[in-house]
Image (tube, rainbow, N blue to C red; front, side, top):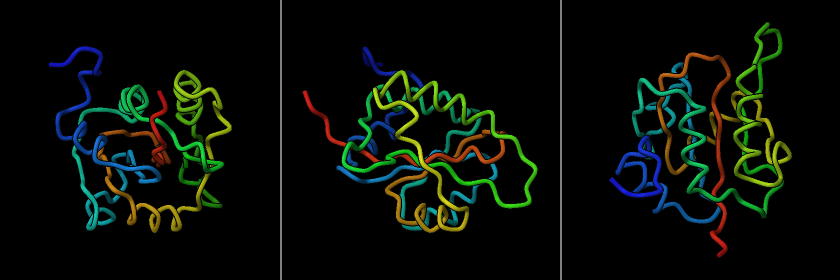
Length: 146
């Protein structure tokens, strides 16, 4: 155990977050996301039994978001024709506002299949047990300034 580090951040995940450099991306994927298919060239970390919001909150306590891009946080757009509500996005906004002064301005969306292509280029994918639809979120790492 370490002081000041959220317990949900496993040694494996902490190692990955430390290894990532400026502009590397990590995907926190919902339970429907094809994590292992998209993550063939990435590190896939299983966090079954956990939801995206709790993992997002813990990661943002130690992970700087990129300040050199307009949207260092990206969500998968809802497909045209899908009658799906995304209340989890409001939760993401609240979490991000706690950790980054830019708040919801950091958040963009990427069309579903383009999101998959970007996910294939990510450094890591966290496979969660999240049941909310369209709950996938991609974070782009910034620099630590202290």
